[in-house]
Image: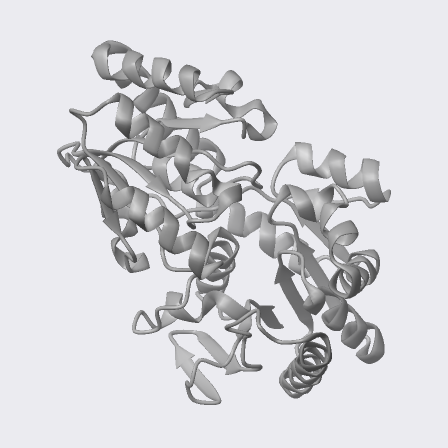
Length: 370
């Protein structure tokens, strides 16, 4: 069976010389594709954007295909932007058509969702769409993006199968769009725990307003004797990014790293005392699972997918910076509580997010004829 994943920003996960920013959606696509490629019953392909690489490259059992050039600026006027998007759509269609896969798989809301669905209807192929965020499921993306939202809406309505990350997203998608879906949990490879010395309180994300990095800086200000690490690649609005960098540099106890290669990310997590999430909204964050598999508790401001913090005691969901400071102080002071949560984290990751288990479910979905 020939399977094709479409993930424009996933290329740096294969070639770490490429410094383009990627997120959890790309990580999940990469991990599933890599695991699937170990099974010789599947011929695995992936389409990424054009970063100057060869037209076709081989990474283990995965064949990478180059498609369109991503927009690197928001300065295009309406006409130029429309022409650019049309060209990209045609380029993507041509690449997908040339691959001639049996199943096409795409994750995260975008115009490409509709383009892929159109090709699959035209060529009688199967399309699987995977959600990546709240806005994929609650109608926000469709409402806030005129053309791309219309294409996305068409795409999910004509997908043969929709996979959500959580029961909450499954319900949300049905309530807003009357679309049925299957839950496929966030997957991760598991390794024996290391005895790394805990060095810092960690934050990972983009320096954009919806990620609310100011909350983390407020935490650093409150705990001046603690070491804080922010990993945030350059992305989004340049002025917003530069303003946050200025703020970060004013803190003596905050270390900033622009980029960490994916191969080194697990080691960064294993050295963390805890992971802080301050995003306004998320899906089921890949960073949560990366922390838990390293026995690192997560403290989140508002984001609590499927009430995971309440049900499994893998950290805390807070609602204000003040409450966040209170929970951090408690974990720093109470080692018995900390160790209990750390054990819960690792046990939960092993039980619910082991890629060996999830890839079996994924293969069953791929092999299903309906």
